[in-house]
Image (cartoon, rainbow, N blue to C red; front, side, top):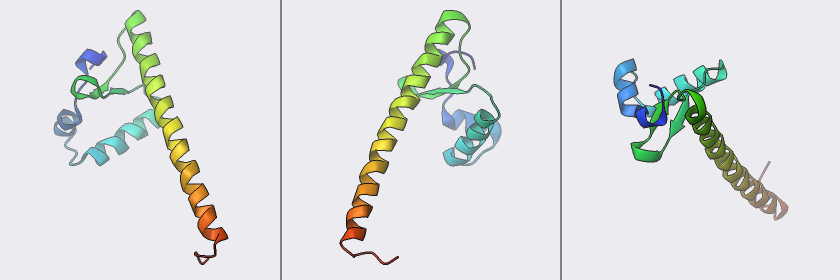
Length: 98
Protein backbone atom coordinates (compact mmCIF):
# COMPACT_ATOMS: atom_id res chain seq x y z
CA UNK A 1 0.00 0.00 0.00
CA UNK A 2 1.15 3.51 -0.71
CA UNK A 3 1.44 6.16 1.99
CA UNK A 4 1.81 5.97 5.75
CA UNK A 5 -1.92 6.41 6.23
CA UNK A 6 -2.37 3.10 4.36
CA UNK A 7 0.35 1.21 6.26
CA UNK A 8 -0.46 -2.49 6.49
CA UNK A 9 -0.01 -4.07 9.93
CA UNK A 10 2.24 -7.12 10.29
CA UNK A 11 -0.70 -9.41 11.08
CA UNK A 12 -2.37 -8.47 7.78
CA UNK A 13 0.82 -8.97 5.79
CA UNK A 14 1.28 -12.37 7.44
CA UNK A 15 -2.26 -13.33 6.36
CA UNK A 16 -1.61 -12.17 2.78
CA UNK A 17 1.72 -13.97 2.54
CA UNK A 18 0.97 -17.07 4.59
CA UNK A 19 3.90 -16.37 6.91
CA UNK A 20 3.43 -17.66 10.44
CA UNK A 21 5.43 -15.22 12.59
CA UNK A 22 6.43 -11.57 12.66
CA UNK A 23 10.05 -12.72 12.61
CA UNK A 24 9.45 -14.59 9.34
CA UNK A 25 7.89 -11.43 7.91
CA UNK A 26 10.82 -9.30 9.10
CA UNK A 27 13.25 -11.67 7.39
CA UNK A 28 11.36 -11.38 4.09
CA UNK A 29 11.19 -7.59 4.36
CA UNK A 30 14.91 -7.39 5.22
CA UNK A 31 15.69 -9.47 2.12
CA UNK A 32 13.54 -7.22 -0.07
CA UNK A 33 15.22 -4.12 1.36
CA UNK A 34 18.67 -5.66 0.81
CA UNK A 35 17.69 -6.11 -2.85
CA UNK A 36 16.97 -2.38 -3.05
CA UNK A 37 13.21 -2.22 -2.53
CA UNK A 38 12.00 0.81 -0.58
CA UNK A 39 9.72 -0.55 2.13
CA UNK A 40 8.96 1.97 4.85
CA UNK A 41 7.48 1.23 8.25
CA UNK A 42 5.85 3.18 11.02
CA UNK A 43 4.86 2.62 14.63
CA UNK A 44 2.22 5.37 14.51
CA UNK A 45 -1.49 4.65 14.36
CA UNK A 46 -1.10 0.93 14.91
CA UNK A 47 2.01 0.66 12.76
CA UNK A 48 2.69 -1.20 9.58
CA UNK A 49 4.62 -1.31 6.33
CA UNK A 50 4.06 0.85 3.27
CA UNK A 51 5.50 2.31 0.09
CA UNK A 52 6.05 6.06 0.15
CA UNK A 53 3.40 8.40 -1.20
CA UNK A 54 4.06 10.37 -4.36
CA UNK A 55 5.51 13.86 -4.29
CA UNK A 56 6.35 15.97 -1.27
CA UNK A 57 4.43 13.75 1.13
CA UNK A 58 6.51 10.76 0.05
CA UNK A 59 9.72 12.72 0.58
CA UNK A 60 8.50 13.58 4.08
CA UNK A 61 7.66 9.92 4.78
CA UNK A 62 11.12 8.80 3.64
CA UNK A 63 12.80 11.47 5.78
CA UNK A 64 10.78 10.40 8.81
CA UNK A 65 11.73 6.75 8.22
CA UNK A 66 15.41 7.69 7.93
CA UNK A 67 15.23 9.67 11.19
CA UNK A 68 13.57 6.73 12.97
CA UNK A 69 16.22 4.27 11.78
CA UNK A 70 19.00 6.71 12.61
CA UNK A 71 17.70 7.14 16.18
CA UNK A 72 17.42 3.38 16.53
CA UNK A 73 20.99 2.96 15.29
CA UNK A 74 22.28 5.55 17.79
CA UNK A 75 20.50 3.79 20.65
CA UNK A 76 21.80 0.41 19.50
CA UNK A 77 25.34 1.80 19.38
CA UNK A 78 25.00 3.11 22.94
CA UNK A 79 23.84 -0.32 24.13
CA UNK A 80 26.76 -1.99 22.34
CA UNK A 81 29.23 0.44 23.87
CA UNK A 82 27.90 -0.21 27.38
CA UNK A 83 27.98 -3.98 26.88
CA UNK A 84 31.54 -3.88 25.52
CA UNK A 85 32.70 -1.77 28.47
CA UNK A 86 31.08 -4.18 30.92
CA UNK A 87 32.72 -7.13 29.19
CA UNK A 88 36.08 -5.35 29.35
CA UNK A 89 35.69 -4.76 33.09
CA UNK A 90 34.77 -8.41 33.65
CA UNK A 91 37.77 -9.58 31.65
CA UNK A 92 40.06 -7.16 33.52
CA UNK A 93 38.94 -8.60 36.85
CA UNK A 94 39.71 -12.10 35.62
CA UNK A 95 36.15 -13.33 36.05
CA UNK A 96 35.84 -14.66 32.56
CA UNK A 97 37.76 -17.51 31.04
CA UNK A 98 38.76 -17.16 27.42
